Length: 109
Length: 112
Image (cartoon, rainbow over all chains, first blue to last red; front, side):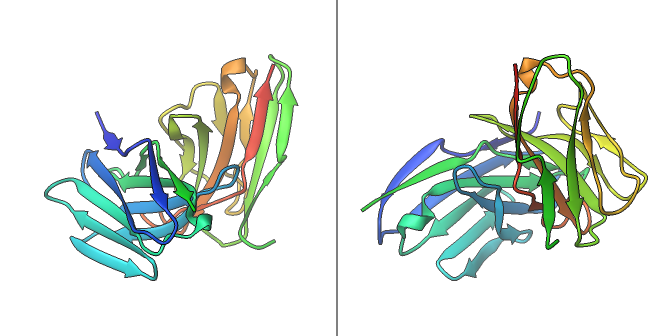
């Protein structure tokens, strides 16, 4: 079966750095997405990785290792507004997006 | 309209009733999707459409039907609602199946 694993919940301090991991086992791989979802709202796109390595976008970076079936989202200089769920999703060989259950990130002052 | 819209925002429905959730996008995206999101389970794909006139089944299609008569609209119908269909429903669209999906604001459905 296909599977995406992420921690259920993480806690971090305002101003700090946090890394949210995602491991996947899917039938084929055509890219990996990270989305942010605030409580009661729709998911919004953060990043896309299809090749190995680090993609940096402001305070957020996303890393991919296809050989290890592994990705992480790195959030720097955490702000209270970063409190949200972070969803990892992989496009499989049939071009269907397989979603993880999400990681709820709690930011404390 | 800018982006993707859904209606209604929320609904309470009696079990056994028929209900259509509406979704419209103005981005001329070819692909559209319907997901349900339940606590602890993440997003699960119900149905999708690669292009106008074609639809496909996702992970949890039973009890739901869709149509794609044109590029912009992708309604989801519950023929006879059951309490297990209580959920938050998100519509999404993307230019193609392998590109970034953009989500509507969601419909919160309670089936009693």
